[in-house]
Image (cartoon, rainbow, N blue to C red; front, side):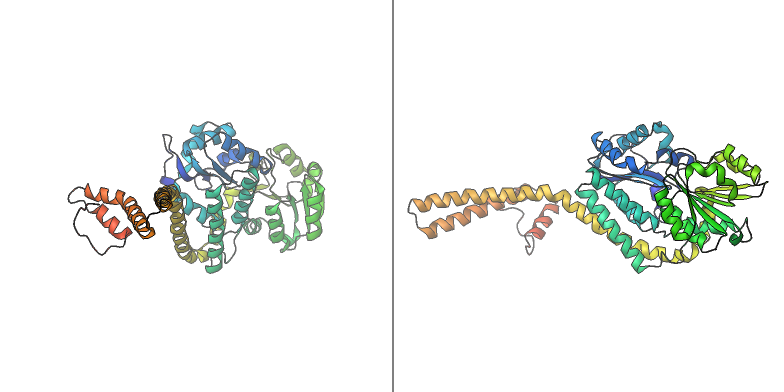
Length: 440
C-alpha cells in the first residue's frame, strides 16, 4: 500500500528534536497483537492520559487514537522521542521493547498518514469506515481534555473533510468487507449451516453490534448477548430477538452455544481455559467456533490449543479479509491523488502559520514608522507650517523609512548574488533590475 514503505523506514529521532507536528505510534503492520494490546488506552482513562501527556511536556497539543489495530499519538510543538518515553512509561513497558515497532512521522508524513488512516487506506480492511468514527471519538476526548489546540484541531477537521471527499468520490468503500463479515465467512468453514447453530456475543459495543447484524442475516437458531451491565445487552437483545444476560452467567451457559464472538473493553481475559474445558465436557466434544476481536484479548490464547475449539483472533482474520480487497484496489490511486492535493493544501496553511510572527513584526515596524511621521507632521501643523509642505515632508519621510532596509540590503549585496534582487523585484512588482545599488 502506498505510503507504508515510507512510514516504516522513518526512524525515531535519537536526539531531542522539537517538531511543529508529528505522529508516533504502532499498528497492525508494525507490531504484533501481543505488543499492541499492551499499549491500549481504556476509553474511560483517555482524557486523564492526554492531560498527563501534556503536563509531562513532550507536546503542547495532543490527541491519542487507540483501537484494536493501532495506538497513535498526534502531537504539536513537541519531541517524538520524549513522547515515546512517555508512552512506554505510562504502560510500564521498556522503551526498547516498543522502539523497533514504532513509527515516528514528521510534519508532512504525519498529515498524509492522518488523511490515509481516516480514509481507510491504512486499515487492516481497506476502506473500512469504522476508523473514521474512532478518530472522531479521539478528537472529542482531546477537546474535552483541553489538549486540542489550533494546529491539531485544524488537522483533524481537514482530515474528516478529506475522508468524506474520498468516500464520496471513489469506490473505496464498495463491496464492504469487515471483521464481522469475515467472522461469518470463517464460521462457514466449521459449520455447514449457521441456521442450525446458537450464537453468543460477549460484549455490547459497536463491533459486537456489527457482528450481530451479520450473523443475524444468516438466521441462526438462537442468539444471546452477555454484557457487564444488562441495559445495553437488553437493547441489542430486543433488536435481534435474542436473550440478554450478565457476564457472570457465562460459566453456566457457555456450553449451550456453538459460536462465540467476544469483544469487550476488559483488561483481563473473560473466558479462560478452565471455563472452556468444562464447557467442552458438557458439550460432549461438539466443536465450538470462537472469535476474539478484543484488544487486550477476552479469551485466553491457550483455549485455541484445545481439541474441538476453533479460536481466531484479529490477526488470524487478516488473510481472509484481504480476499475481498481486490475490487477496492482500483479506487486507491484515485484516493491517493485526492489525499496528496489536500496534504499540499494543509502544509500551505501550516507554512502560513509559521510566517505569522514575521508578518506581525513587519506590520508593527511599518506602524511604528507611520506613527513617528504622523507625530512629526502634527507638531509642524501646530506650529503653523504650510500643510502642503508638511504633507510632502511626511510622505517623503515615510517612504524613506519603509524603503531604508531593502535599499541598504541591495547596496551591500555581493556581486553575482541575484537572489535578493529577484526577491525585491517580485515583492515590489518592479519591471527589471536597474543599477545594483542606489542612494536614498
